[in-house]
Length: 159
Ligand code: CUA
Image 1 (cartoon, helix red, strand yellow):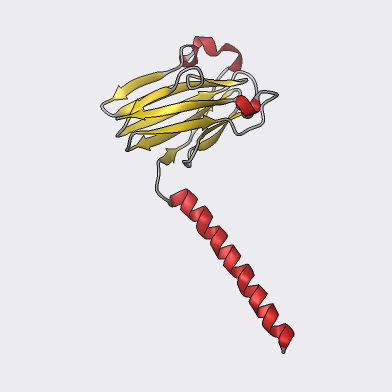
Image 2 (image 1 turned 60 degrees about the horizontal axis):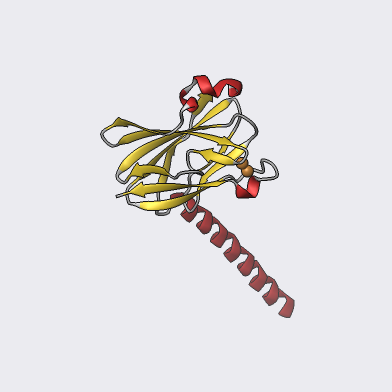
């Protein structure tokens, strides 16, 4: 019957859509690009970041090809990142420690799967491998106030 055929067609189309969606999500999580290999963290007193490593945030070399980057995300900038780019070398493993003194922010390296929340009182820890020189936008993807849409920065992976 005619109705039967259309029903089959639409069922097939719907299934195809679901498979395509799953494939897209899987590719996003497992596909090429830099890899988020760890995201644990700790707590911190958001009111006195000045007394911690976040008092003078930035890049610290901790091993031959290992680096730590402390970043303060605040309304409406990343320190460092916004006023000047964060610079790390290629072929390195970089652990980002990100926290906020004010409200919830986001920390996303555009075009990668590095994407996490930044919560006052908590330290977001994300370890990333950078195999090649590149340039990434740092984006705040959590609404954090009137200047949210301007809150962005830059990460440069230098050769
Ligand atoms: Cu910070 Cu949106």
